[in-house]
Amino acid sequence: MKFLIDAQLPARLAGLLSAAGHDVVHTSQLPDGNRTTDTSLATVADAEDRVVITKDRDFRDSHLLRRTPRRLVAYPNTAAEKALAASACIPGSRCWYTDSVNAGFE
Image (cartoon, rainbow, N blue to C red; front, side, top):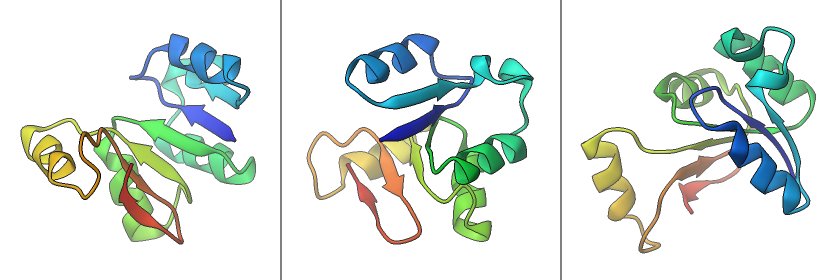
């Protein structure tokens, strides 16, 4: 699977996913590094068919309203988001996953 990891998540996550056999890019590896805009990240992810992994609520909103990025894993930040994740059908859920076809908690 191909991932693009957003700036607020550690670069070591990219290393862990890469070691597990995934094709991973962290924003620090992009030309503008961790200052790459959300719009640019979404464009790169969609062009390279990558799943964006983020803690940034703006990505979730952009995905739901404009369908970009097409594939997204958004970790909950607020107490309300964590409570929603905890009430998901899969106990111990830590993130909300969605793409243009599926939505749910994993």
